[in-house]
Length: 209
Image (tube, rainbow, N blue to C red; front, side):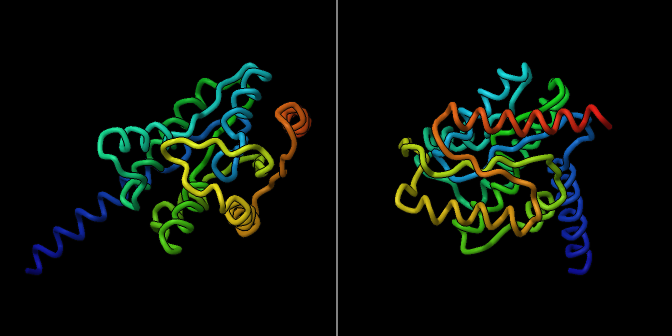
């Protein structure tokens, strides 16, 4: 029995070590900006707009394709067991695309967002490995997207009547983790103009260093 327990502990240790490595950011010199906030608040649109404006790449939300595939094949929505695979997929995308970015990389989400969803949907539970990565991974700026855009329903979105509650949960996470963020409100043009202003400031600061 002791040998079996020892083997199990070793296997779990190796598995956790592998997951921990896959959730880490790889070193890069590019500025990283995250679109952060509840579903259907314009994050993907803004990521695409900013990437075009700065002639760079953007990191899509891995969970969208992953969960759409789950829905199409299993007719179920996200479960707690999906969060680590989603987190690994997200960081794989980010680390790969960071090598292709010019001066700045725009991320449609990050692991702190995954952590918020975990807490809100699963009774406050967050996998320790996800929590560790969400705290350790670093970004230069967050754009917190407000709920003043119309709700667009799809197969995955499910809280149209709790938008303010979810927005407050995302804002609280940024405050608790000491993240630098700007709240973006208004139409697409107004949001883009404000976002460009702050990204330009980051780039100018980087140039002076």
